[in-house]
Length: 214
Image (cartoon, rainbow, N blue to C red; front, side):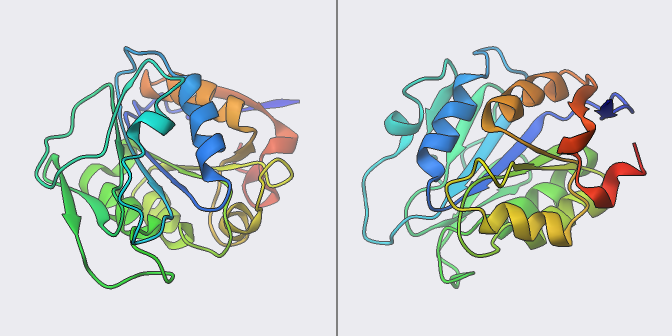
C-alpha cells in the first residue's frame, strides 16, 4: 500500500542535507538523481576534520549536473546550486545568503548539521526539506525538529542501507520523520518536492509515528 507525502502540494525548494561517516558516497548518489535545472538550492553539511583544507566540491559534484561549490560567506543563494560547508566552518542561511562562521563546535564538530537545518527552518519554513543521511551520533535530529515545527518536511536515509545508522535512527526516534528511503529514492523525491508535487512511498517506508497521519 502506498501513501503520499506533501499531499498539500507545497513547493519545497529549499533542501538541506546532513551526513557524517559514509556521507560522501551517499551524497554523490543522491545528487546524481537530480537534474541540472532543479528549481531549488541545496545546502549540505558532512562532518569533516578541521585540518582538511581540500575543496570537496569536485568530489561531491562528479556525477551531478548541478553546480557544486564551497561558498564564501555572503554568497547569495541561487537555484540550481549545491553549497557544501567548508572545513572548520558552520554554514547557515541568512537573509538569502550563505553565512560561514567559526562558532563553537556542536556535536564535537564544525561544521555541524543542526545550525544549517535550524537556520533554514527559520528563514524558509514550509519550503524546507531536511534530509539526514548516514552518520554516527545524533547531529541533525534537533535541526529536523525545527524544520518540522516550521512546516517543512523531514526525510532520512533508510537505516538498513546507511553505512552508519545512528543519525537516521535518532531522527526517526525523536522527530516526525515523514519517510525513511534509500538514497536513490530520496533523490527522486526531492525532484518532485521542488516542483510542488506529491511523493508516493510504500507505507512500510513511513515510520510508525507518522503512519496514521497519511
